[in-house]
Image (cartoon, rainbow, N blue to C red; front, side, top):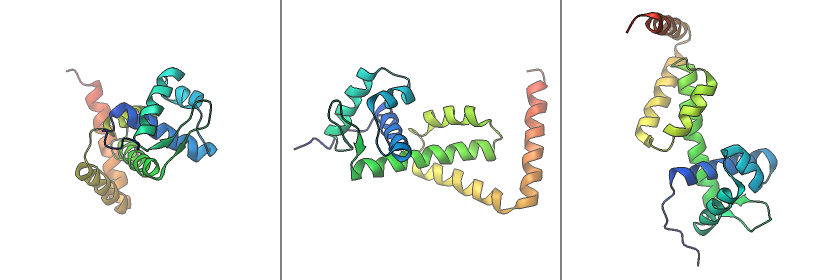
Length: 153
């Protein structure tokens, strides 16, 4: 029987998220595509996929395509939802450029707990529900940030 109790590490979460994104885009994931997406070697991806398969999160056999199990799909969706929520908050509320927000979300998604993430989402929703004042608030915040960047330390 497959070992299912191993803890999902940050790095394994990254691989699982990559598999989910690739499966959504292409129907399946290949080791070379996961390696390209995560910036690691194919042998590193293979080792991670073996661990994820032992945890019953992916279907993996050497030289075959990778797909998600039901457990893997559920876990991957949760990770990706955190990532997306953090990116949207940073872009839409903090006025962070998308590329920087993506990079930071990749690190933050592994450590932010559900309650804090919920508050991020609620603040974003709250600000979005106040159309005109929100725009003014964001404009004021962006201007404040630009002034502070130019100010001597």
